[in-house]
Image (tube, rainbow, N blue to C red; front, side, top):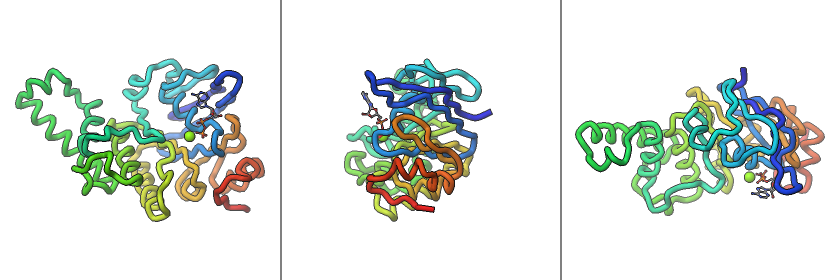
Length: 258
Ligand SMILES: Nc1ncnc2c1ncn2[C@@H]1O[C@H](COP(=O)(O)OP(=O)(O)O)[C@@H](O)[C@H]1O
Ligand SMILES: [Mg+2]
């Protein structure tokens, strides 16, 4: 059984099919890449999976359970974490405070307890802070813990977005263009960290425009164009697929020709 399965998934915006009868299976423990030219429907697929958008047709199955109509917070509670293309950070809070907040989704410290701050709550908070710190370390930004999120350069903000997603103890995370706008060194570094996340057993669905990053990281790739799947399989096969090459023609990216 696939961890996540999309069955005939479609999303119409007016007459425009942003996603068109898409079938896709994400196997547990893999980094599955979802690629396609600009406007091909990648972010829409993410919004459908995470419950931000309702599909026009089709099903989303998570661990054998139909989650098509579940609201966002319930999808997150089932272990499906996500980051956003424009990293949704609380800009005025520090990096550490951002991750602490994300951790609270899972620790059960509610606002009432925060108010009374009894001994047990304080201990819990300490543990949460330590976990948040460990996540910042894992993403290579522990030294930025006390900086305002708004002041972080793009690469570090993206790393913080991933730390936030991991804070909810997900079985799988959805990463939308995690290396967008990064320089080559930052890109390599981030992709290595993403592989390390996979190696600790978290499945990853990765939307990325940077072909080289995708090629060197993914176990399996699905390529879409105009919302339709045009190729799927091992990175080597997908990137040399004629339909994929055609779809990317005119885009300013390097694609490895066969
Ligand atoms: N909320 C929306 N309303 C109308 N059209 C949308 C909306 N979101 C995306 N689209 C359209 O759907 C298509 C796919 O967009 P998107 O999923 O953002 O592509 P990608 O992430 O691959 O660049 C585009 O044509 C885009 O203009
Ligand atoms: Mg997008």
